[in-house]
Image 1 (cartoon, helix red, strand yellow):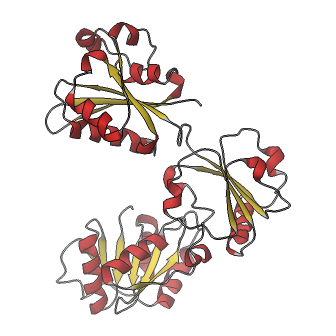
Image 2: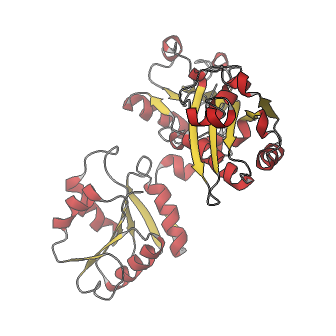
Image 3: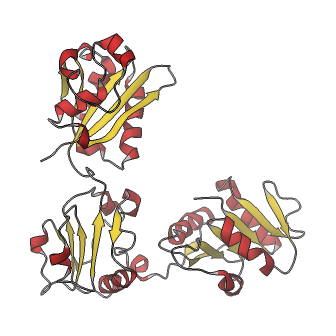
Length: 371
């Protein structure tokens, strides 16, 4: 979310806009005079005609919530629209805040999700009209978006493949890599979506469309079998793989500080804590209570290495200060690499440093393990 804009043209609409602003403290209120005179917060008074404000609103705010009739929102915004990939999320909320309607950028701009959020605040009904959302099925253009997946497909293929999904055509969804957290949004796949683990299971004779989550670089011969209804998704390298976690920390660093550092490192690459295979560090930290507690909580081994073995590992961020304290220029990066039986090319997260409120420092490095 960038800076939201809340636009109201009536007294009741202004009151509702102010209520929403309590939940969105960064929001700017655009209120028709004189209804904003007594409101708190960042209030910009509007004078008719409203059309003169719309271009700047669309350019500078996202989302934009209009507390007005749907028809008015359509007429005001229509002359300034560019495309669904560039227009901000726009919502219309009725005078009584009973209905919340995504008007623009329902999928890519997140208007549908904002509608659910706003509706919850007002105990209102979100009116979702996009087919995949109303049906509760996969949105082809959103699959993996929050996991940093890249999509390979032109707009025509996306449209035709999405049509196959919502029209109950048999669709092969092949996941060979990446996180499976996308299933949190669609825990029950529609019957026409066939979840497969190997591309060899997909057959153009049985499946009208293909959704393929892969790192495979040679995809042309497969895609040619679905020339108009295939979409490839590329998760970040290492996402969904088993993970080797290297940890360095000050003496006496508590579990909470180490966990915060670990969660920051995992979030950086959208990695799952459930994929951690082991934790590794220098042997002088073998009695560190915070590390032992972390390994116990995650039910993973704590692997220990002597300084002379860690010092042999080539890492991107060596430190002579660390060498002075431990006898090796790297602890977290070197330990993660050694435990994964790998090298620096498999580093997903280089040495991430975190200083807790207690003043203790922790470093985390993450390497993905080749099968």
